[in-house]
Image 1 (cartoon, rainbow, N blue to C red):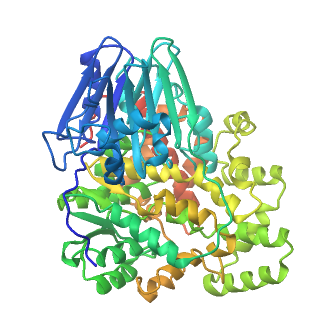
Image 2: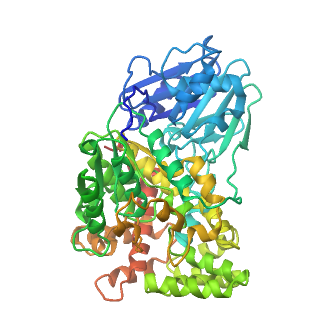
Image 3: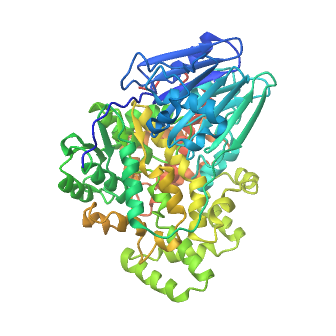
Length: 624
């Protein structure tokens, strides 16, 4: 049945900033760097203790939605970025004790804080990053949502405390910009970012997901504490329960007075969202946005077409090219503001740009589904390892047979064998694979990096999923936040409803992988909603690009060549420059495999980040 139309007030997809002293001009300068996150309005609060800034993306309620928002006696103030989807239900409980002057969820947060203190966070279903200034207790209370959907960074030197939605706002202060070589090592060696509370700027950190930060203004003391932990439990598999939670998660995320569209890749996750949407609202009002690469192996048009035929939605497409990337590459560096692994991030950037051109302010997306349902192929290795360690040999053999039958690959078996290798041998394999790195740099940081042990050492599939949720999800969320906010778009993620996440993590491994299929229980739950071709799909793509082909384009090739020959690139101290040049020289040969292209893009993107944010060659660049 279609959802009954109701007036819902959401308008906080924004940027926030502040610090623990009064400086109106500096706070406004910080807010200006966040204008893309909130192009429609700005607001500030100043007193002798704090400066708070806010940029707002307006959806409705322009007059009453102005932040910062306060409680009845103006003793508590808030700047906030996010959505509390269940705020209507929470408001009903709070109206008996508090007088509201807006219809927003922002005000609900303030009054929930007054009633429940820091424990108010356990009542929220949503995504958020906020700072509450409590004048009575003389403190700042900051929080990020359970999964880290919304960003929140800070600088603290024992005296000055500065926070913001993006790093570039904090950089408006006179802060030293020291590259964080521990993270640069993990980036180059393991293809990983956003796996710790550190950033690529040594002096700047982030409030970890599922944490709070309490800054005592008078004492100048900062405490960071975890308020939520994801745990695996023991629940019975119930596909109807999964379906109901998933559909309710979508319904909550439809609370908006503006049209809600969706990203659509043709995979199980985004297709499930779109097909579920079609059962809730008029199909004619659903717009989807997809990236396609006609004629390429990574093209997913055939699956997208299945969803379109089933739902009769209004589909929109973009096909990013290498020449497009060259025009936008500095914008991409600016908005992402930390190094990213490859040009795949650009595909999502263009999808968001397309949605912006079509007038959308709110999009649903399937981010998180792979992490809670073992969607990546390498998870088979963890499941096979679990079965072997438990002595379930017959089940293991059946699963290996089914895996090969479905995927025509030995990758899952190889992944299992790798997991049994001694740690030193795992490290050796990575070193051999990444011999484009400077040897002295590699040797210096190899022993200090804990990433490989933190992520790979897992004894079961569920244990592995917990580790991936802890260490690998957040970089995808950051890419999405920056890409969407670059075009002032709010993205909502139904798979990251905490009720769905907690329930799925309580199910046994065999609910996620069975019969050579990933996402087993969710596929069953989506029967009758998804087209059969999507339900039976075994292939898996992310936001892919033909990156190796783009490297061969004359304009990009010349661009890369100039960087590799530059003095700054040679003097970074992270690369074996001769080896990288040799790889690049062979770009037109048959032996130029995907990994070679990944290496080229990775070092180029790192160098461009250095030039913009550390060397400050593009200090005046303001993005779109």
